[in-house]
Amino acid sequence: MWRFPSALLLGIALAYGLRIWLHKLPVKSFVEVQHKKLVAVLTLPMLAVLCVFVRYGGAFNYAHSINWESAARLKSNLLNEAILDDGQALYRVRDMKRKIDKVTNINITVAQLREKIAASGGNKNADSIDKAFLHTVKQPKLAKQPRNIVLIVGESFGDWPFLPKYKDLGLVDNMLALKNASDAAHITTMLPHGSGTISAVNSLVSGIPDMGLYENYQANSFNGKYATGIGYIMKQLGYKTVFWYGGFSGWQNIGKFTKAQSFDEFHCADEFSDNSGNAWGCSDAALFKQIEAYMSKEKEQEKVFHVVLTTSNHPPYSIDVDGMGFPRAKVKSKLPADIANDEKTLTELGHIWYADKTMGDFVKQA
Image 1 (tube, rainbow, N blue to C red):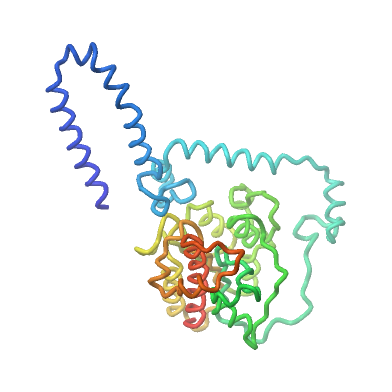
Image 2 (image 1 turned 60 degrees about the vertical axis):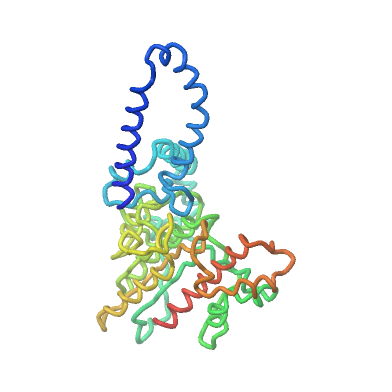
């Protein structure tokens, strides 16, 4: 809030200074000669200075920038569009239109569709897609279902730090301990849903493998429920469904999309106050603190299914991981030859360590 009045005062001061300067210039010589020279001399440096001010949408670095993926901070779409600069807004509209047109321009007959259903193991004579792939589990449900189920989707949290070659770096000690616990199960052959975070979210929320359909923007996603969606399935099992995100609700339409697909509640950085966050939202530690507070207030008989999507293990890598206890020197001394031995890389590794630490702390607390 302090920046807005500061900008007003600076604008007034600059306008007043310009007024004084213009009054002191000899009008005739300025108009006839100096005006053209002045414009020619000042244009390039002024453009350079202007670029510094507008490059990050009012901030001076990426960590506090406003871009099309993080501009939707407010509840009003009109104000959100005003926050985003026109160039990015136009690019965003054009980019989304091209992507959706590319994947939805498909011509297929009813007969061809039924053959593809049969080839995928479904009943091609069924009345709908849902019925074509409906399966009933024969095994009985648990006699006592868990009260809380928490599914954490760790941003950029890949499997490579768990490999024997890298595990001595100590980046994932908490999750490694969970993985090796006697009551744990794990799988090493799971592949990511796609090349980015939204691909993972779309496939999880809709239950549809990633095919570039951008379910988060499709009208069908807001007119009905995907029977394969994880929220939809958990509600059939009697669970209240809650989606937690460390970023903002306007990112990739995630708030509206999850609420439309059987999640009773959606909570994100829009609601949290956190000075350690950046352009993408709050820190993972702040996110998990909110979840812990929520769980402590749950009713005893209430069954809740939580999906948690973290954000901190992602550029601009602005968390003070050293202040959190990241053993930078120790990790640096153990780096293998195939990992760059520079401070920028170590900071990125520190954010993997931080993701592991915050998830581990939450599991212990919960």
